[in-house]
Amino acid sequence: MVLIDTFLTRLNDILVKIASAIFILFLGFIIGRFLGKLSHKILKELEIDEMIANAIRVRIPLADLVSFIVHFFIYSAAIVLSLNQFGIGIKFLYFIVVIILLSLLIFIITTIKDLIPNLYAATKIKNKFAQGQKLKVGNIEGTIIEITNTDVRIVTKHDDFMSIPNSYLRKKLKI
Image 1 (cartoon, helix red, strand yellow):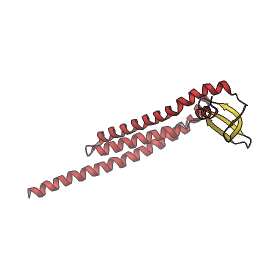
Image 2: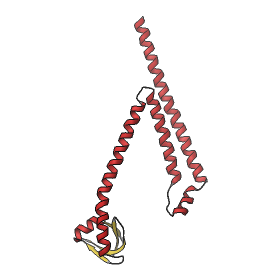
Image 3: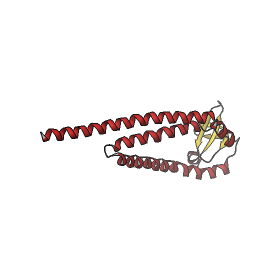
Image 4: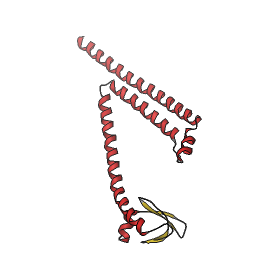
């Protein structure tokens, strides 16, 4: 009899935790969706995207970005709170933070790996070439329209626009 009571008590506790976790998830997704759409609508009404585009001359979809961030954080909080019902919420959050930081680190390393040689090559290329000059590299031939810190942009005789990384150009032309 005691064994059955213990089993039923534990089963009841587990079912309450599962129901609580599902309720928290459901409520979090509803609140996240509502607040995300509300923030998007408010920012669209304020015409924040147009104000920023006029101020800095770059079009940034700020309303969409803020809406995504609101969705993300509320959904994440709901997931962590629901997992916390089982005692794994904070551990899960630490795991996600570590994964995000590792991904960010890998992104930064791979970007720098490509950026540094291109920046170095840009100094050499800017001294040798100018806008409007003809350029031939391998099968690619065209007129230089822009030399940036990462690439040289050309237009071919068929009006195709191409970007050639500075490091590639430096190796091929032995600059």
